[in-house]
Length: 87
Image (cartoon, rainbow, N blue to C red; front, side, top):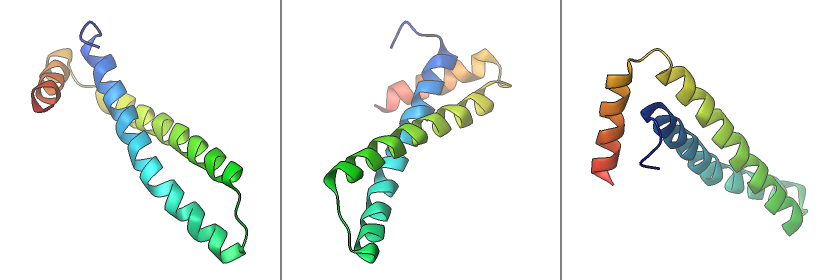
């Protein structure tokens, strides 16, 4: 990932954050829904989890794109360097 442009790295980071947030939220919401309806399917749980995580990554990438598109490349590079130094 080190050879990617700063905008792409920031976009990938936003997509990852969105996927992580969605995966944390979707599964408990699905399980609560299944308890209320008294039905449970592992296949449906996995499908919901995968689709929710994919949707979260898409939303995160979209938010990241709109957040980064108007910022100068120097500022984005500084943010990416800050992310790299924290991890």
